[in-house]
Image (cartoon, rainbow, N blue to C red; front, side, top):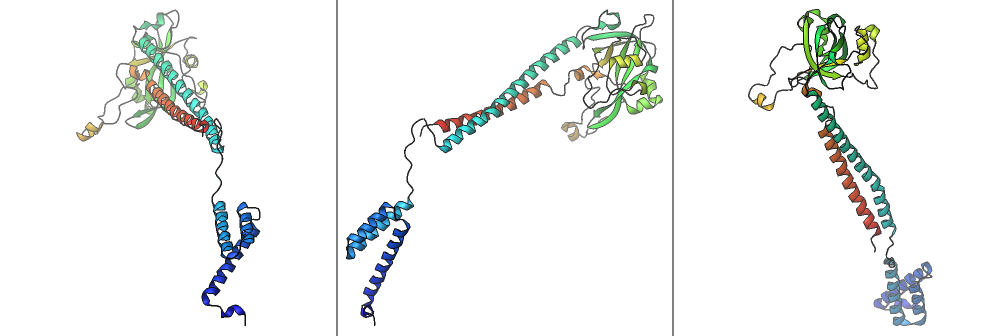
Length: 349
């Protein structure tokens, strides 16, 4: 029998605890032979004996494990420098400067467009509100949108139709054409091409509908001088030999109608607002009052544009102002983020 079998139970448990401590200390020494705390542990275990050695070993082991659990704090960063995260903040701020400046430029461009278009509208309105000039009596052709008047006889047999063009009435689109009719001055041989307005497709195809819209004899008209249209990228070329006209080309239309070279184009306008664009849908008050329908009105074709229609652009000055405000708001927000990121990146720690 081994001698420690006869020891009391308390002494056996104390011996087992000592063995466990020594085993843990030995394992720690093998895993971390270069740690300063472990060297202290080995010296303490080697130089002390009994209970004193055990207490010293326990204290050294606790200091070693505590030193490994708490990471070392970095040293102070010199003023004017930044760590890796701060460097990323600076680059992020510099990256945001580009879209911020671009948005500011686009806002300025929209503002300039607004100014240009407003001046164009003011100049156009001043020309259209002036006294009409006798177009056939002028030696030189005036500027576009000048108010003019003509007197002569329509040549309805030589009318040309440009289109198709869509007219919207209360949200419903209707297909039609622009009616171009020569007007000749008797006795002088002079003539002008008159843009009379919009006609529906049926008006062009059915002679019965055209009977009420074909004035005879000498007529006197007022309108504005036009220069034609610039075709878009997807507009096909005109086909004069087949009578297909997709955009207004004054020289080609005048030649097809047998007019002399250089014949001007006059567009008839009316003082009635919205005659060409058409009436809008009923208002909320009309619906609540039981008047939610649009009364049927006999329209006389061709339908000319009104003065109000001639002052309309697809993008009005107010739209340009809204675009400019949007771009400048985006620019201010982006530049504010950029400045904040840069200041955080270069701020001394």
